[in-house]
Length: 80
Image: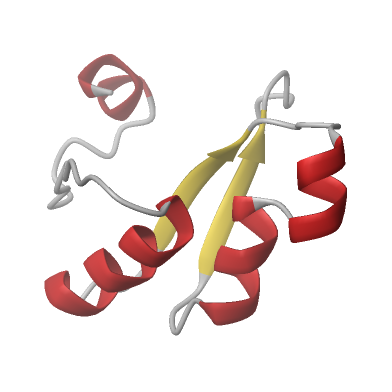
């Protein structure tokens, strides 16, 4: 993460790295609220399985419930 932050020229931003255990989408939303975050950035790893179809992906659940702007980056995205 540090390398990516430095490469983007955003080294002066305050960035918190948080590790939690639990249901991913619930812990992400909880962390956003607890930290008073302004923006959430998350990677998106596509899963194409029956559980994902029936229950929905974590990314989709976060998008639907996130109280702040959320930036999702897909693997292999082109640099701007």
